[in-house]
Length: 429
Image 1: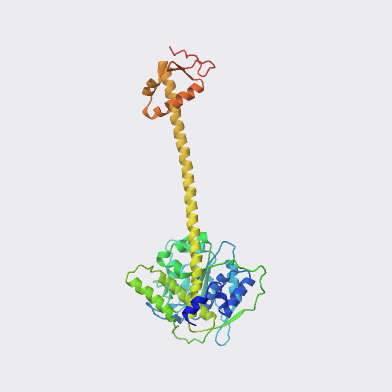
Image 2: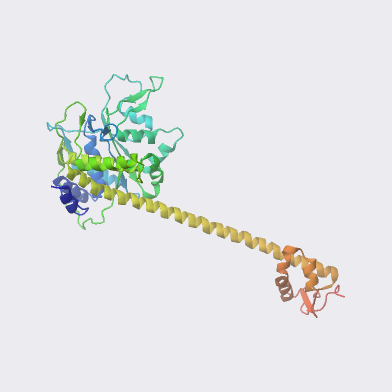
């Protein structure tokens, strides 16, 4: 099928009907009330994690690249990230070419140093075989990943970026007890992270290093979930191709090679492109390989690339939704801070105005006590400059309260300071 025909036919709605294994994943996800895109993401990581590390992408740009794949499962707390992982685990059964079951060890994500030690314990000789060659790492909550990555001296985020590419991992410390290094392409590792949108900031804000572009972001929801869940189908058996033991480069579809080469050429020429989009296209190619593996094949086709494009468009929308949530939350926080500050400023201003009014009141009474009577002009001249603006309001208040009387344009203190009759005070002579 030509690329144009595939592009025309494949949409997010028809994606699931393109292959029997995709129909199975959709049906199994809905039978378990899990989000199908999230289940697919986990299934892709499990398919890659079941493949031995010598299988890699060829050095089309730079050096060879590992198949290692990262998936972010996006949803609110309790919305089904664990359900997606569980459904994907039960939906598929991976076997080798001879039919033997392939199992993959799973580990919680820890420190950057701990990643290398998962495969080779600290202190092991470099010529010793690895304790394991494949692993699937999980971080149920993105804030756990953020906390681990933000520790002083943490190497987690840089090690994850190297893990994605299949580069050398670990640290060649002087002490053998703490030394642990892994050669490039000697390990297979995939990662799934549960992401609550409002807590995704630390992961998204690592964009300068290209970390967000190394993830495929998939929702755990299913707006089109049927009212009645279908019956759970039997697990689908994915048979791995017959691989050799040596380093093997997969074929890259010409359409993918051309797109990646064009982007790299534009970057080299300084044209206005986002250089980090290269990571996004590499992630798309890895998704295409995962879809190939789920289909039990060893050659990646243009259809795999196009199907991966649908997955990446879902990923882009999901990630954009997270960014929108973070922006709205920041705006709400800014508005709340602005309202709080405005309220505090208003309180401070009211108190300052109250103090000025009281000072103006005291000043008028002091002048009238001293002089007995005074015109408005004389009162204004006897008051401090900053109090003069309050004179008229102060006189009006004092007259209303019965403290001051006006006789012929002059003001005097009332008898008894607030008596019922406005008679001149005894000092008003």
